[in-house]
Length: 221
Ligand code: ADP
Ligand code: MG
Image (cartoon, rainbow, N blue to C red; front, side, top):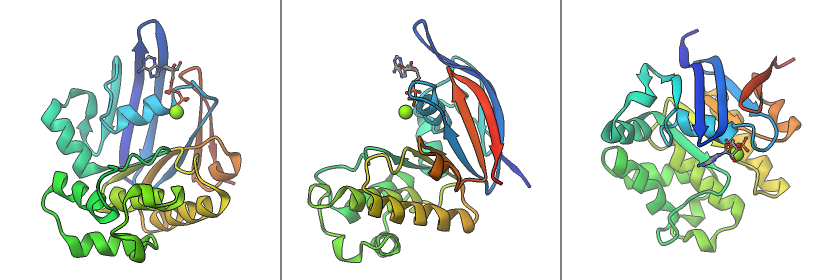
């Protein structure tokens, strides 16, 4: 199997807070990893560095051959739009754009918009009859499904999901997890932050952080 992500002695300091204190691990292409650990242990910081939303203080994060910390602003923008699909706990949809426009915006940043493809992506997440709705007219679960469609639209190498079901009720949690399971079985590489042991069990490996350090690595049994 090919290595898609290499994390080497990664450190991130915010002033005198050490959010990541020398984290090293690899992710194989096609793997589903759950990042676990208590609040404040550095999970979001790790995801943000991998996705080029933040830069490390030292160490390296290499994603599909790109040393993320060394990219300049335009390189980072291209890296994010071409290689990464983000799913955040708070959805982060643009409030004044409809569901389909939110998906098409991601296409626009990547290359060119394609309404048919955007519509198909929303169909895949079960939102065929919601394409013209604004985020405010959608339930939390529906908004997160729009975010999943947006994350997938550019066929990213790596899906980064930071507590993707943290704000959802049980029914929508089930729908989003089913989508993640499908993506995994299609060969997508997924790094997912979760608090819930039951959700962590779905992943191939669980990597636990404590105080910015790797505390434990568990393979699915
Ligand atoms: P988690 O996602 O595991 O809850 P975070 O990665 O968000 O943890 O945070 C790790 C540590 O870094 C925490 O102590 C947090 O307060 C601190 N931290 C995170 N982001 C910032 C920031 N932008 N400025 C200052 N401190 C931060
Ligand atoms: Mg977090």
